[in-house]
Length: 409
Ligand code: C5P
Image 1 (cartoon, rainbow, N blue to C red):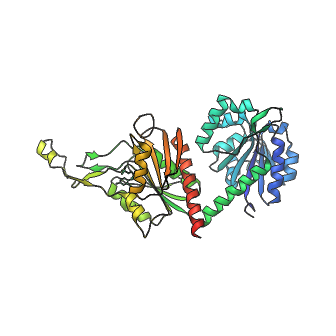
Image 2 (cartoon, rainbow, N blue to C red; image 1 turned 120 degrees about the vertical axis):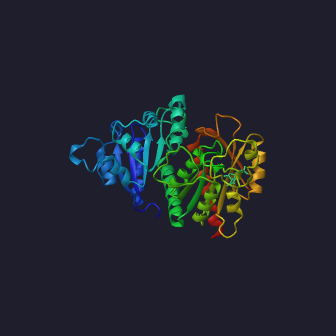
């Protein structure tokens, strides 16, 4: 039922496991899935367009320069048509091309031009899989947001045993079922999220302000990742140099007060993620003119505490989001201090990061975090790209939300 009328674009790569794609197609067709296929040049060495078309009842696309059916093989149209794209088998060569963004044939062009979820099903000899180059590509592709099914351990076509064996058509089928199940749930529930990010600026006069080093990158990536999971996400961002994706709803603000007002306007939401580095204090008054530099003027600057947006969200009984997530930037005792913060701030999850080094955290593209829940359960994510970390955070949030709703219903 879940798979009925879903549109799956299957890209068949050049490996001996390509024949298993035919089994997968049969399984999916039995469940009324619509299938279109792209067969790569080397894939054609293992399976024929005729056998694929016989099973899919659709043309097998091969060439990017097919003059006879130009409209039909438009790479954008193929991607637009699909609910999801699956690459089976994802060979070491294909993974390399994807990791460097090569677009040399129909398959790689579609993959580069698509904004749909892409599932890669690797299959290769164990040493090829474990080779540093392949492992580096694997990491890069995870970071780009590709999803992997397998590989698993087992005996391979070459007679060797180890990691690199392709997941079976049954395992891929089960993955797709749970993938669409989750997507359906999210769609039906019409989940909404708000994410705050970046610094805030608290002006002393027209040109001077209190602010901090935050680049807004991590919060932005979390918003993108939630959006990608099908959750309608609004990002409220302080001043940053980020170039935002058009896929997201963005509201730019400057001060903490403006951030708070925008957050309030967005309620009710199911998820709130406070990644912003809100200035703790603000001048009580903003001077109309540039403050002259005499000591009494400086001494007369009065500051007050800014409102705590995270606290407001998590303590607000009427419109409390189901999942409230805070961030904790620490320079020492990261986990211990963050566990304290989760209690003080009444949130469900806290993302703790160590900002003691320049290499990770503020301004860097990398981060290293601990995801701590209110029961004290800790998941550590070693140093990785902020986009990768964001995808892990988004998945944990969604699973918590689905679990939460299941228990309530
Ligand atoms: O107390 P501390 O500033 O360390 O807490 C950090 C967490 O609180 C972050 O999630 C941050 O976005 C949030 N916060 C907030 N409003 C403030 C201060 C912090 O939402 N005024």
